[in-house]
Image (cartoon, rainbow, N blue to C red; front, side):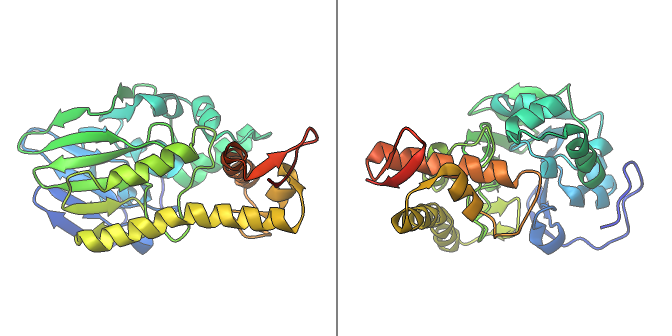
Length: 309
């Protein structure tokens, strides 16, 4: 997509699906990262949006009429349209609030330990039109917003980030599941604020939310069949156990340090690089190792070498 911050929306055709007062406008490749899927709600009193992915820069007046943005969580790809609606109120779960209010808060949540923060910030500004929102307000689990004839309800389902929430629009029954996105990549819990333990719990809880339609931020898009949704949710969660088994297989080959395991990669293919890759691999593998040590399946010695228990 060719986008310029502050310019008029580009004349492209955007696929959409409508469910009463709720519209889903699909990003490129069904919202595959770096894009995402945009949810808009036309309340009789208030017009609202869930997150603002890259595609929002092409929607035009329908998006720019947004008065309220409820963020399901805070990452660069979910903030890419905020610059277009500077007067809209922005609400974020309180655990993600520092990440949206300043770049330092964002970097702390990433946990990248990036040496060149200026270069990282420049990349975010160039590729995602990143601009912090110090005016953002915090909300908590169970928060509700009455839009007039539609209502939003927040369910705190952390793991991906500390403040990750699923947002349900009632009475339409449309649940925006955010980055519990059911992709083939599987759950991402590689940030400094991420939690493997919480992600496991959130996957289990998601099925209990009383929805009729499920919208993912990325890749999958819209589900209207519950059984299909539950099958893909189970496959998504199974990626966690697959990663655990791969770690155990590597330790069966020979004892290894965390650094050696990171070099072998668990999330990303060998040779794939990025400013976040090493920190994400380190955070992800560390959490799995902590679980395995707690369970007695893996032991670690004083030199930081892990082996099967």
